[in-house]
Image (cartoon, rainbow, N blue to C red; front, side, top):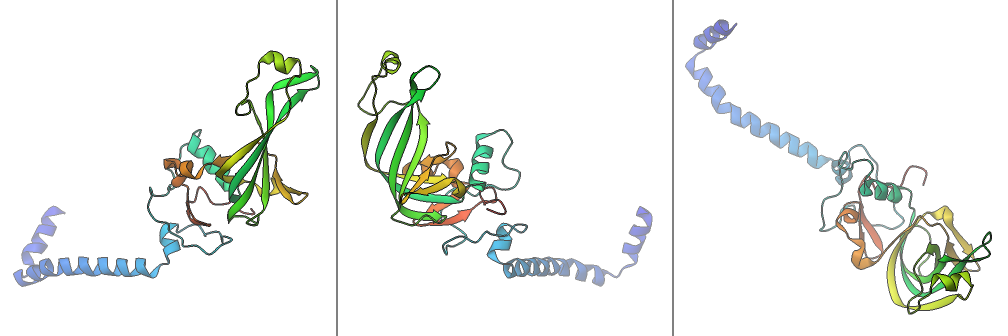
Length: 240
């Protein structure tokens, strides 16, 4: 086979061989230009995620944010990792607001079987929504997040004997205008007496200064009053 190919090349006129060598770069350049033209003809959305549709957000925002690390790509997240857990949390979260906390109430939990208070508290934290980035909670609304905690109220100290003797009381602490992002599931938010109440323990609360950890920013990019970009791993699951 090799000898036949060599014989054919020897029979080709030198002029034709020279022409082919000169034309090869032109063909390559034309192919590259055609590919670039086809890519430019695609929408920005198709170039980023060809196989996935962008979910329509509640506000008009650009698809691509500014700065920060590139978003997670398919296959980059491994199972049984913190990134996977955060990805799953983001995919079922349909409420993302920036709230300004103004007070926290610590309610000691009562153990019915032992007839005494426990070493844990129900922490009721109230804030006012200052931005609504994903979801339907209006700006200006009061939101109360209820969760369990084993931290004692600031400025206080209790011993286990105090809890056993039921010597502890509810305590309300003023918050100095603490800003937090709240990621929540809409069906778990209930409106009670004009206040939005969220009782589910599984929620994410992040201070704005700490929101952009390397992992978080690779899932979702938040700008004032808008989500500017989401990775496929942060998109709401179908039907949410």
